[in-house]
Length: 374
Image 1: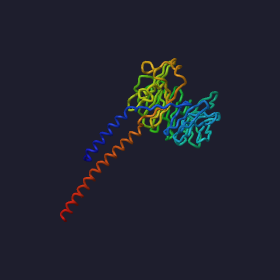
Image 2: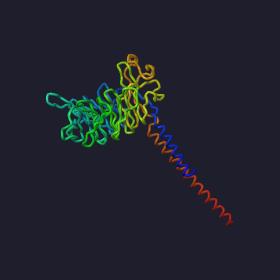
Image 3: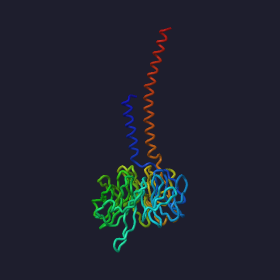
């Protein structure tokens, strides 16, 4: 094979692989027992709640975070934020630190935290978003807008590794606000006259939000995209690959399967469960990491009616709530490794053929020279 043909073949293989990535993978379903999951990091550690309180599930072990801890989020180092009766906290390797008043809702890989606390403003008590940068606790209004023109009630819901904070702000109406390096960006859906709410933020600066009528949308570098779906949905997680996980609006007696949005397409999560999830139907998602692992609650598929929902009364027969971690099979990085391995193998084969031909020619020439000498 010439190098030109080899390059063409490699590009074709890459194009086929990219096309395969356009749809969600099949998921291996593993049941979680003894706790309700809430958040998962890129190491596969899971934060949750058991009968005894908040726990960290790591390498098959449940680690209790301590009496009175109400955990909200964890980072890739296994550090946790949340609250106790004393205020917002960071938990590290069994050590608990109170970082300020209120509650921590999101923690990044630098240990920075955002959340909210209550502050008295005249006769009223209002909620204020905060940023803890590892050493100091500051109100986002005073940190990002020293002029003091930013006012109202605010709740910091997500923080990325660049220290950008996504918050929900209520002034005259509800807004989704992105705090970036001393500036305030309104990432509410501009085409909608009603309120907008924050959903999730990733390290690429992409934001998922939703309106007060539950129309989900994406914000990416000033561009808004209303997601093409036929139901009201609330964003749950937006990973660094740009995949969005959403929960469908639930009525009192009806549950829908969560949705995945990637590559401009929307997918029903329960349609992609592998053999281990053949009898299950996911009704609520809690979080997703960059490996594509998803935390969800599920019921027996036999309770599903008309393909996309189950009636709440039927859930009584399903026993206690059942929680699961869904793992892509193969996981996305496995495809990358397989493709890289294939390319390396093809290159080695091409090189060995050329090298083999050279040695065979040399040996043949040497044999002829020896026959002449004899």
